[in-house]
Length: 303
Length: 86
Image (cartoon, rainbow over the protein chains, first blue to last red):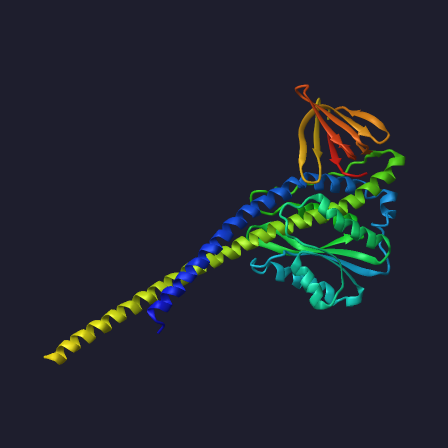
């Protein structure tokens, strides 16, 4: 049996760990709230843009847009959104598993990779895939500006004809306890993928969920000369929105996953600390009993 | 469906800037300034740099400077998407 001192020290160190994990839990809870709010305040914009696009999806200039029309040959682009830091349960491994699934069907040389977040970058490195653009996922308050670098890079690669399709792999925030890794087809854009996006924007449960809305497409008057403008304006903008939104979702997921992981760690630490306390008490009692019996046997011997 | 008011939403990528009922909406359309009144026909148009003015039901004016964007009018609601570039 471990000595009294060892037990005491072990318990103390566990208690310290518990304090840390508890603090991290609280911090993550606040951050989660914030990222959720950000995702929500960005929602009306995304919704409106998607709705408008859906309404003009039948227009000729939409179908002919290079970002919409399918391409027959080229590489596959992947934007992988992960967190920079760990301690978030199975969050990153789940995303990476999804990515692995996509990549297993494609030769390494046929992949154009962009990673947002260190974990994803490490993943590509391990696989020996060259990363065209890597951005850290540190800041919690992401601005649209920062996203533009990524969007522009993707558009540049795609429009140059190098890639035939683009996927965004990220974590969809469903609720505090449920996050789903998801693969989203970014390009070529289609009516179905737009519809899908509209549905995926709202969280299913929790404070910010909303009942599903249905949109009735109506025919719009678009001035003939501006129709092309509208399309060439909306489509790249939409790409930016999708990426921005995926990032916000990933952020909210990261923080809630970390919060839950830290809560579990705090609970477990409390449990272990309690067990150690019991063990410590037993050991102390044993030591006292031993000492008393030594004394009494000493007295007996002296008689 | 005749209504006296127009539901106006103005948003940029991160925030909703205005949401509410309005009497009129003036926007800098890329083909010239235009005013949207209630019961306007469905319309989509791009916007250029200028000022968006919303006159709400209390005749109060709300002004927003934009660098560009997109306007959608449908079912008596107008949506202005503000964007950095055009």
